[in-house]
Amino acid sequence: MAKRKVAFITGIAGQDGSYLADFLLEKGYKVAGLMRRTSNIRRTNITHLLGKISIEFGDLLDYHTLESAIKKHQPDEVYNLAAQSVPADSWTHPIYTGEVTALGVTRMLEAVRSGKPDAKFYQGSSREVFGGARHQVCNEETPYLANNPYGVAKVYGHLITRTYRESYGMFACGGILFNHESPRRGLHFVTRKITMGVACIKLGIANPPLNEAGEPLVIDGKLLLGNLEAKRDWGYAKEYVEAMWLMLQRKEPEDYVIATNSLNSVKDFCKSAFEQVGLNWKDHVRSHVQFTRPTEITASRGDYSKAKKELGWEPKTGFQDLVKLMVEADLERLSR
Image 1: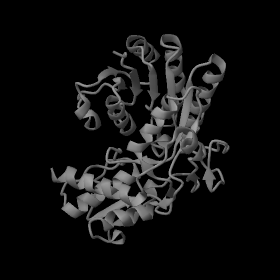
Image 2: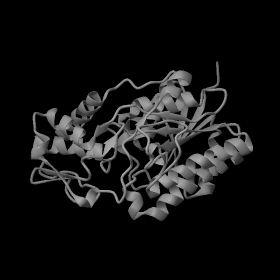
Image 3: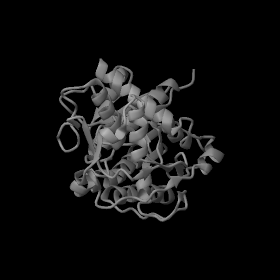
Image 4: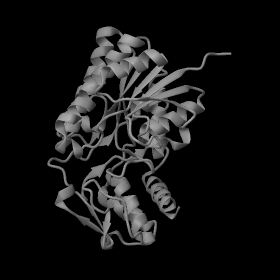
């Protein structure tokens, strides 16, 4: 009987980490993951996985914990998905963002180099590395022009991964993922704010969840958002984790852009989401300066043609279907 492969996932309780754990378990992997210790282990995204995966408590600030976990589990594949992952929060927490999202990658690479140097390493990079690049479509050759602390940290993480690959011969690659959403997305991301707001308004929820400012998400039937004209290339996170895995199945490490090559605005997302429940978004959405960024990334699509050619990967879920499944999930969540 063939030995089961072992995967180690940082950020396993997050959107991408939990979907990746689901995917790898279906592939027959043994899965271990890193999550920050809290008073309550039952994180919503991985409740269904408890008992099926191993959990190590720690974070990307603590090198010794990372090294110990790698030596303990001896993974064949390591997926570094943990980060301070909210671009807007990186303005209020720039030092922490740098420590976790940038230097945290170096700590993980060092832990792998020390504890399991033949493991294949995936670094979760981001579209934010392109920042204000004046390109209608971005691919693997597009210059990095990050314009917020999160994006700058992601550039460091991406380049240090390449440096370890070239300097030490490690199988280390980066997936430059454009925005990818799902019902497991955190409420501090605009897509989940919208779909949860729609559900709260439709169902008349008296005590809605809090937004990132610590205020009710919906007040008097109104949902406060930032720049409604901001445009993004949005895909389905559940499909994007397959691309991560495919990158580590290659003989040689390469970096890939993962995206849909389509573009929609926050306004488009609002319109589609409210239409799902028969409401007009204009009656319920307001733009507020409190939720705008000091700088906005340019409206660029992601060219995934290299991933399609070399990995056989392409997106399957369109924009309208993605919005629909997220709204339905939040309606069901609140109805329960």
